[in-house]
Amino acid sequence: MKKTAGLLCAMLCSMAAWAQPQTPERWWAGIVSQGQSMPVLPDEHFQADPTANSYGNQVQPLLLSDRGNVIWSEEPFGFAIADGKVETTAASGEIIRTKAGDNLRDAYLHASRNFFPPQGRLPDELLFAAPQYNTWIELIYNQNQRDILNYAEHIVAHGFPPGVLMIDDNWQEDYGKWDFHPGRFPDPKALIGRLHEMGFKVMLWVCPFVSPDSDVFRELLARGAFLTEESAAPLGNALPSETTGAAVPRIVPWWNGYSAVLDLSNPAAREWFEAQLDRLQSEYGVDGFKFDAGDAEYYARGSSYGGVSANEQSRLFGETGLKYPLNEYRAMWKMGGQPLVERLRDKSHSWDDLRKLVPSMALAGLMGYAFSCPDMVGGGEFISFLEGAPLDQELIVRSAQCHALMPMMQFSAAPWRILDAEHLAVVKKCVALRQRHADYILAEARKSSRTGEPILRPMEYAFPGQGLASCKQQFMLGDRLLVAPVVEAGATHHRVALPQGRWRGFDGKRYRGPATVTVAVDLETLPYFEREK
Image (cartoon, rainbow, N blue to C red; front, side, top):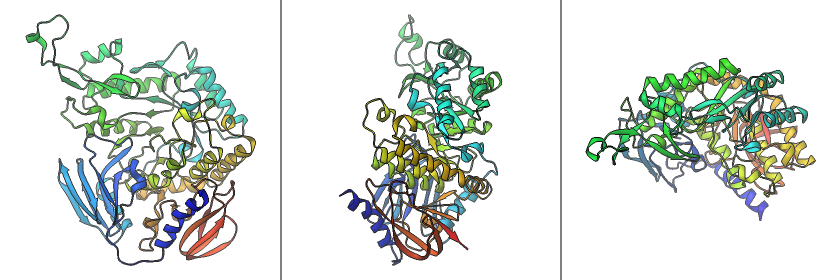
């Protein structure tokens, strides 16, 4: 059954390819966490409203079609897609509809030039040139100096190349108290110095939250640095008439507690936050930051210094990262074309979520988020990797193969801990494959920073009108490499739709397209093809 199901998606793709009757318009909408639903096919329905809602990932007020149509607004708007048509259901700003050309690429390039032009700058190049490593799954909330150094030493000892190392949540004293916890980090400067000596650059996890009732909270409260709301009850020992209705800090629930939220429309809040980051760089040698949270939902129903919307607060949090070339975000509003790294939201350790990687990365590129990372190899939900949890080693290998020829590759769960020798060897081959193509990946990233074109491209973008819109599990890396990862358990054969042209396969064979080819795949096989001139 697994093999039959594994071929079904590829068969549908191959049936769609090369048959090119006129069909209703197909649309891609800027809700990156729903990439698996794109394009919305004529017999499908999709609706969304990103007003104060990031859907757990990046959003963009943009829709593109394979007929060259573009829908954009500077403000969030609700929409529904059905029968190839788009209806807007709510809007807080002008909605611009443009016929930009005849295909998806025409539509994207118009949107890029007019609404989120490229800036000619990249995030730190090491993010592309080598794998990234995140301490979250191995240490969870016990981030500490000894175990972080041990993790880094094992990376090198097991033959993985050093790259960017991200120290995740709970390295700090508290939310908003952005200093290393003295009990867990006796000498953080020495730790970071040692990591640098080993060839790593170091990022720290941060967020826009401040824990209530701390000294930092009281300091920032006096400076008006938080979102506020109207008090519905008397404060302290005051009479109800004296304080009911007064502005108080808005305390929001999030995945790790309750916190006040920085109001980044207030210069005092921005200056304070950046001063903390700058101090971490100057005092300890930190290279950059993983900016987590920032979802528009956390800013909803709050009053701000600048009177800005929840979505705009999310954008302002994204703007903070422009000062730090070594950055990463999960939630974002607008900011396409900017030198910011956007990571897919955490994926579960499952084949269903593995199948979301390619279409979600493809959608991120179409929304102007070219510098994207496909979550963590094997998934980013730590529960799946605890001692004794059932692991699917084949899934981890196939996940690593998906990452290998994407713009970025990130590990968190230590492969040497969770894999046997056979599967670990295959994952290391994935890393070696990436290293062989590192110069090409980096060259494409540099090109994207100038042209605005996605690094990872949907097949319909790269080959308009060849019937490839439904090929959701293939992509082009730049204009030369076609990558078709295996995303079905137990697969022994894999169908690939090759567009028009000459192709040299991973197996050394030469192919001529358009054609659908079936290739044998074992555990070690990542099907990819190079376009020949």
